[in-house]
Image: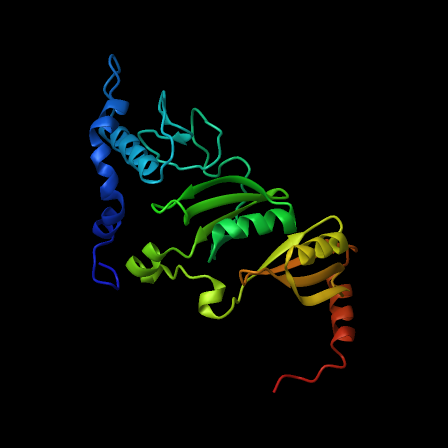
Length: 253
C-alpha cells in the first residue's frame, strides 16, 4: 500500500487498462504461426512491453525476441527509447550512458526539449507521449556525450502517485539542484544559452579551482552551471587560492 491507500498495481492499471482491449492482437503478435512456445516469464515480459507500446501509442513490431527496439528475454525486460536493437547478453548499462543521468521533471517538457536544443545543442533521442498525446511520460536527450531524461509534470502521477513528488521547480518554488556541464568554450556556450532565454544567476568568472564558471536558470526553473577547465591544480594550490578568495568574507552568523 502507498500513502494514498491504493495498491500501486491497481492504480497503474487504471492507466493501462484502456489498452488491454488489444489483448487479442497482442496474443497474435506473441504467438505467430509456427513459433515455438516461450518460457512464461519471457512471454509475460513480451506482452507487458507490447501493452506499454500500445498504451503510449508507440509502434510495436516483433523481431525475434524483440518488440520494436525493446529487448525482452526470459530474465530481463528492458525499455530503451533509442532505436538500437541489441542481441545476446544485456549489459547492466546500455551503450551511450554513464553511471549518473539527470532525470528532470518539467512543466512543459516538449517546450523544454526545444529550449535545450537551442541553448545547449541537445539532440533528441526519443520521446514517449502520455495518453493525451501532449504530455510526455518520458523523453531522452543527448547533450555532449551525456544523456538527459525528462518527464512532464503529469497530472496522472501528481494525483495518483503523490509520493513520487512528480513536480517541477516552478510548482515547488525553486530547486536545490544544479546540473553541471563542461564545455569547450564556456563564454560562447553561456552567450548561446542566454540568447535562447536562460537567465544569469552567476556571471562567468575565473574560479580558484581552475575553471571558468557561471550559473544559469532555464525558463522551466532548473539551474545549470557551465564551465571550461583552464588549469590543473594540486589540492594544496586550490586550498591556498580558496583562502585568498574568501579572506574578505564575513563568517556565517
